[in-house]
Picture 1 (cartoon, rainbow, N blue to C red):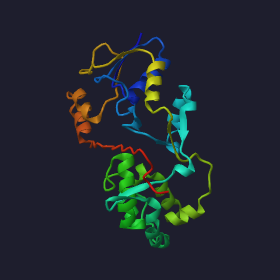
Picture 2 (picture 1 turned 45 degrees about the horizontal axis):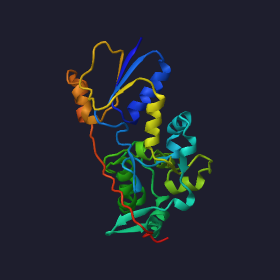
Picture 3 (picture 1 turned 120 degrees about the horizontal axis):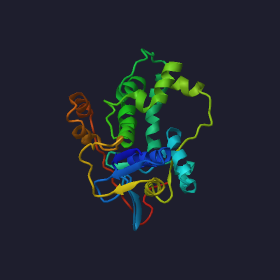
Length: 277
C-alpha cells in the first residue's frame, strides 16, 4: 500500500488529495494543515454582507481545467458567469473611482500610431517595456499597471509579457502590430468573461474535502519529510519551501532566489447604490 503525505490544505493540496485518492484507491493518504480551516487564501464569508477574502473570479478562457473539476464535483449549477451588463470596470485615479471608458479617448492617438511602429524582435520582455513601446507610457501606467497588480500581484517592470498576456505578444509576432492583429484576427467562439460560484468559492473547498479520501489533520504543521513515505506533496507557500530542502543547497538556493509578493484585498460594502450608471 502506498503512503502519501500532503502538506498544505489549500486548493492545491486538496486537489492533489482528490486526484491521488482516485488514482490510488488503496493508498494511505494524510493531509496536514497548520491552521484551523481548509482553503488557504480561498475564504468566503457571509456576515451581513457576502465577501470573498481571497480570489473571487476566474477567467473562463484560462480556467478550463478548473471548470472541468467543478463539473466533476457536481457543482455545475453553482457556476455564475459574468454578463455583459455587469462588465463595468473602475479605476482609482486622482483620489476617485472612474469608469475605465472615461480614459479611452486618451488611448485613441496611441492606437492610431501603433500600427506604424516597427516590430523589432521576437524575444520576451517586461509588460512595461512591451506596452510602452507599442502604446506609450500612459497606457502602461494607467491600465496595465493596476491590471497586472490586480491579477498577478506583480510589477509590470518585472513580469513577462509572454507569460502574463501571451495574446498581445502573439498579435505583434503574427501581424507586426496590435491594431493590425485586432482587425485581421478572426472572431472565434472561444469562451470569454469571468465566472465564480454562487455560494462562494469555499463551496469548492468543501466539496474537494468531501470527495477526496484520506485523513485531514488541522492545526498540525508538517515540519519534516518523513521516512517510509512513498510520495510527499508540498502544497505550501514559497516562503516555506527552503526549510524542507535545507540539506540540498542547490534546491534551497533556487527557492530562496524566487521572489514572493503579497496582495491585500479591501472589501467595502454600502447599504445603497453609490456608483453612477
